[in-house]
Length: 272
Image (cartoon, rainbow, N blue to C red; front, side):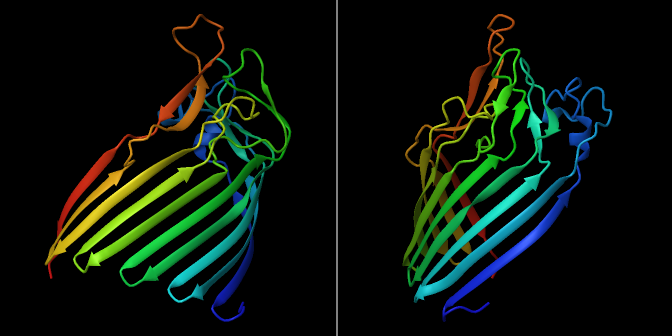
């Protein structure tokens, strides 16, 4: 649909359906869970009934060029899933099984700006995501001994950051050289196994990047630096039994650190 000049508005609505996957059907029995998703089906690979996932999705957006060389977009969306399928880890183990968890929802906003002016390119993007359980349920967790966790409607889904910002700048001081810098910030997240949102969240983190590219005839040399400032961060967290602890002891947090400073150099030749 047309809006004032230089602007365009869009809207969509869709329905979806997903049948349970083979892996989900063979790992849906709490009494015969999978050792781990990487190990494939459970030892007793019988099929257990799961309901199909159904979805309803709305999306609306506004896109335009407010100034020469500057483009902007804003998109709002909401996805409702019925009979969502979720992987669960039983108490005192690291195994996994799947179950229907009722309704879940993902909704949010995506905003982006892009500037193209001669030798300068700049980008900025912001994402707001709210991913929640929309049904009350009791869910197994390795975090508690001999008890399930009470997950209430509105609890955040694990490992989905609420906020995410990415900015980048590319400059071409000469036709044969390009310099770039950028940064990514990711907000706090709920740990896997804490679907009830009762423990401290993973803290937000920021990482910077930089790069350079030089072209000479058919040759192109490049250097990319990730986590430029070598910042420490945590990108994943879950709960599992500690082998050093006595039997029946509560699970402990296990956290995955982000990658340290790293660089990638490249040399490319293209036939002209």
